[in-house]
Amino acid sequence: MSDFKVCTNGHYFQDNLDECPYCPKNQNTMDKTKIDNPANNLGDKTQIFAGGASGNDLNKTQIFQGANADEPMFNASSDRSGRKLVGWLVSFTIDANGADFRLYEGRNIVGSDSACDIVVSNDHTISTKHLTILYRMGIFKFKDEFSTNGTFINDEFMEEGVLTDGDTVKVGNTVFRFRTV
Image (cartoon, rainbow, N blue to C red):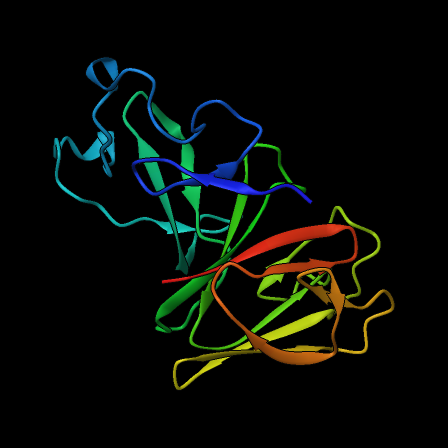
């Protein structure tokens, strides 16, 4: 399993890369990021738009960037229902440039089912409801949900326990790095 580096801006990326893929290459030529609807002609005023597949889901948000106002820069994929952000799962096996998934207070379910909080649909070795990560009173607990292929924490098969910052979590063939806020 590969290790990670941290750039000066705090981004985690694979240690086999020479530079951070998330940092801008030339900050002077970057377009200013706007959260804006050009039709409203409000310049740099912040606008809130409904997201989701239909564009009408008020529990999801899409952020659009300047020149590419028709393409979402970010699409929040989970209804967090007012829960506080408490951590992340980051994977370089899903996407070589990295894919991150937010963890919120309370229960976070990882699996291939579209009803899960963290959906990994491209790995057929992940069960529909594979793993639960529970954040309560400052502690991250995990429990394998009787998955077919098990859950591995730091390369060790485990059915339940406590996660600490920097742990690796393997479900199916997908590896995550667990990070806290």
